[in-house]
Image (cartoon, rainbow, N blue to C red; front, side):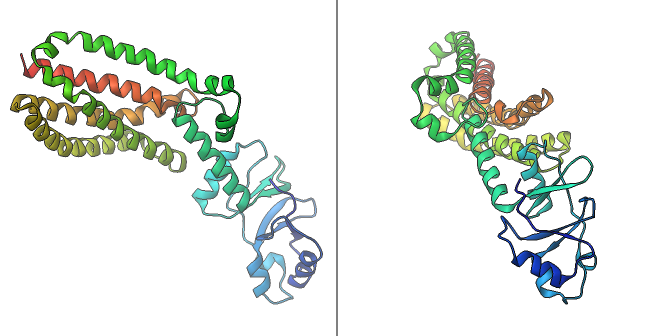
Length: 310
């Protein structure tokens, strides 16, 4: 919040306000904030309206009601979200009695947006620590960087070992059909990629928009199914040609369809669970979701293989 923004009373005329704003250097002068005698915010006037109006006009004639006014304890990310949602250049800040304190102006909104985006970017990479700065991680102490990066990697390692355990249960199928091993990276990579796309869109949409979760998940299910059908057909044909086996191609195609469909929905469910636990949904992305998606997609692959190749 900045406090160096112009304030006027509702009885002030345009000529008085022009004289007022010309006598001082302001931190920002996009709006003139209109307050009562006891300093309560009642409206605002864009500077352009001041300059285009007759000198005898009063602020009461020109002012518009603020679309929103927030209190100082509101998280900075919430301020930016509201500014974007309402398409406004500044967000006024008031105390709990309605008295004007200052405003979050456009350049500060951009700074916060950049800072929050960077924080989410780091968290989506599994790097812990609120407000961790990329330069601190690049130039900082060795132990600080290790500490920031390790926690979710431990979780990913544990789930990865679980994936190895699942794979070991299908050792017989792999020995009889070694070509199955060729396509494990394909199933995991494509399912992860679809999940990452779905998760990125969902986290941002849920932050800015009011979503009906059931409707959104159904939509994502159908999107995942359509993508799964297309990539499943192409992947199945490719698998048949590479393995010289139509049956292996069927396994790859069906597995891609199922894994992609599940991955698209799972990628949305994970941040929903984090939100329900009152945690930042960005924490649920990165290594954790990737590891879970790998576990499920490879399990689907082996289950399909065991059923079709009996």
